[in-house]
Length: 192
Length: 298
Image (cartoon, rainbow over all chains, first blue to last red; front, top):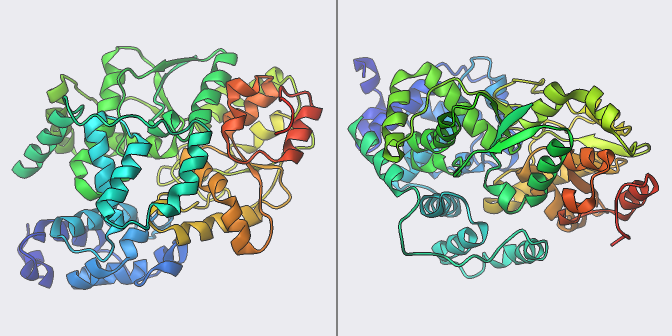
């Protein structure tokens, strides 16, 4: 880590995610604020902070504001910004890194998206593949909101009629398929 | 011609018709598919929130499984999200030696090893460039004359890796559609985003994207897709999208191999055409008029 970078307000303010925020800072440090990303984003209309503004906030180290914005949870990974960025910055991947940093710090305005992704990865850890029916059930339980599932009832029923959802029995016992790999990932990441 | 085949989780669930029609069409074209044994999830976009290394290890496990067989073949992937995740591993390890070592440290837990070099191919790429329109023209039993097809590519087969088509103005599907005797619906929505996973977490945003696509498809008999997420988003919410738009936007959303299979004379069971939610009556009637193997209208 070079000294001029650790002088940024980013490094001074956040002991937990200093490394990840510095890595994010580095990814977008060449941003020239042209706004091509915002103009290319299909979801910018629903964002509280536009992608261009988000990169500026990263460079200014406005961590709280970044993590409290909805912007990166509204990314649908279409890669238009990455494709068109005149500086060739990996913007879609940077959004991914921001999601990780927000979850690691426990700051996010949006409860649903992290819950969904976590449930997804737990299902994969257990079975190796996604079992949609069980995953959605566990996602709804994790939200602790009795209303959310109703938004998906008609889709669920349609899928079942078409034979696209098998109500497999969850197996909470026995060896989890990808446990060893998941544990090793944690170990290797902790080391580096 | 033979390929490793990585179906991915969606093709076992919400996209069973994509799996069935891909296998059926490939069989009928004399292409051998070797399913990667014991394959597991590619991580989809969920790995993002947990760990970067995990987003690399999950797809790499599948590449290592294919490589372990010693067979020299490209890996065929029908799902655009799986395709991108698998491609990303190849791309990232080329720029980062330490990453390759880290991945292999983790894979060693399963006595697997991954080395760069396996070619990952989207079904769209293989159809357009390895099989090609000529072969399809020869094999077509029922010309799909008078059927207007809107080619929809979605995002991740085209971007960020522009391997086999223009990521802004894709065209690879057009010669194939014409080879089957059908007509191309020219529009600008081919490479646009369907909202992807936002349909689960931010439905109002994804519905907006789907609405724009369905509106631009007016005049076409069907939209043809090459991605399970796109198909599901375009197919599942048409009533709601029509209600929001104040007009009927109902349209059939077929997978590319389903359309090809219909022209090749494969049966509706083989292609699982009744597994799609919407199968409009006008399209069914047109197909039946061309003596495609369809049962009575439903």
